[in-house]
Image (cartoon, rainbow, N blue to C red; front, top):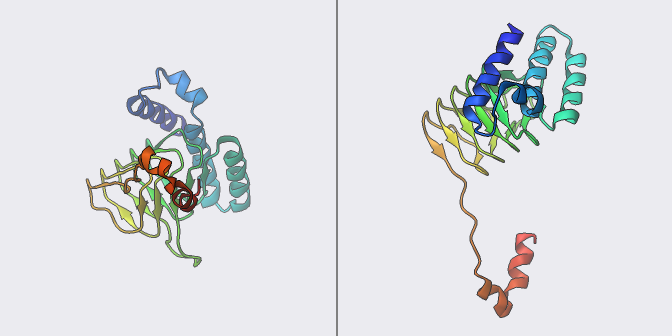
Length: 188
């Protein structure tokens, strides 16, 4: 079962990532996938009462891959992580089948109480780089979350969520001496 899941995951990554050329490449060089495979073991340990060992192994996986998946999180089949550095998936998160996410995604909680506090992501969702999904929200089947979006409410099936665009400041505006105040407020 475990190895069949790896085979399915590799096939899913080959379908979703045009840079993935052959199965051995995905097996060896995709740390997001390594994190998911390790999570499957950690989640089994968590469910069977070996919570300390599961947390310890998850911590080691985070160090090795840059992907932090709490052992209590539930991941479906063929979940793929492309360029996984910085991904965080919280304890009560539920992620459906065929979900694809990119670097920097946070599936986080907003409560300190021991309740369902992380998002539920339904099947077929795509989550863009650095998107942040917070709280016990539901992202509907087939939805797409754009890069940099911050989502705090439910997303209907098939919907697209985009982040607001950053303004482009013309260089002539900056040359007129307006840059100090503006750039200071932008943190650059």
